[in-house]
Length: 502
Image 1 (cartoon, helix red, strand yellow):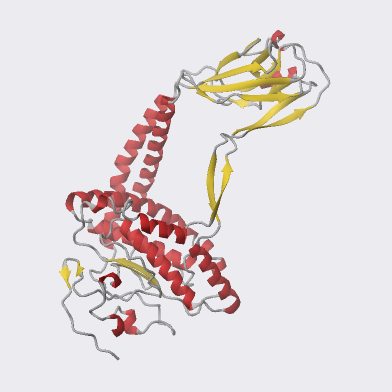
Image 2 (tube, helix red, strand yellow; image 1 turned 90 degrees about the horizontal axis):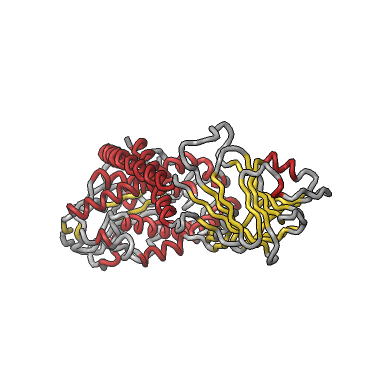
């Protein structure tokens, strides 16, 4: 149910987005045409031609029962009073007409900034005036601005711009436009198809997530639940009481300030004491199956979080099965991140499961019995902005550059480089490669950054109302030490006397 629901929902979202985009395009047509800006084309040859235009394709009936679209070309000679010619004809006829004639083929146009690429085809023959030819499907010529419209049809076509007397040196300002009566029907069909896909896919997705959440191990109700241990134990790890969540005496002081209390979303990562020097080079490749599964699980996570948000807004409660499922997705993601790229702290391959396992990396969130209805509307974006800026500094790329598309000439920002977290992990694994040791202080810092990121993830995913602390809790695991009077799942911890000191 989850897999089918994810696939149908993705198709539904895609179709819906396409329908909205087509509707916007249909509204923006203005006089009925999408029009480009006017551009100057200057070539020294007798003719400027386009590459072959396969408007519809071979094997399609020459007459279709609907209007595919209409192309509009406007051109004017840059030299006042000079006649210009525009024509559209089958590619084969144009090739015969220009055989042995010096002409230029337009290869590519970038609009911002304008730049045209040409291919010069040499020749010595002088062509006959183009208006005298009879093979043109449609053509216009004259002084001033000339306008040509052509209904798209099947076959291979080409456009030719020439001086009307076929003299060399074509210098013209050209503008192109396009319209189609299919835009609104296509938009309507995509909107309807997308709505149907979502109407079927989202309930299946949520039902599948609920089923998996019910079968997965429920999260512990308090911060002192046992955490997974490194298989078989390992030298150099925390002592047994600490691994079971029992805080050291120095951290169990009941006078601990509330701001130092542990957050109810806990991240564990135990460093493998026998890490391979070189295996980190291929872990990203070995983790590809996990990346594929997680891509779909993150989509499901987004949908179930939206559903849970509406449930909290109405009932004040996060549906328990969806909560367990979403924590399981974060747990799965953290295992893979700890293995492959966000820490590279173990060589053990991550399990394919949402449930807790005996793996050296784990993530857990205490289930809240009640959540604020009002905070649902603001905490995931407005209240989280300070933390999101910090997370962007930790996990964002270090530099960007501008790039241009090849067809529309639009520019966009593209990020590259390593994030701060990625740079720290790279330093750690390079040191591991040459020394055979993973620097423990660096591992603690890496764990602190990951811990901050996952707390913010839990908060923005509506799992807790407690605001995440602005601190790096470094080390393999968080030792719970809630302050006296801290409320957990509706219960208040009793006051305790001072902890015994060693």
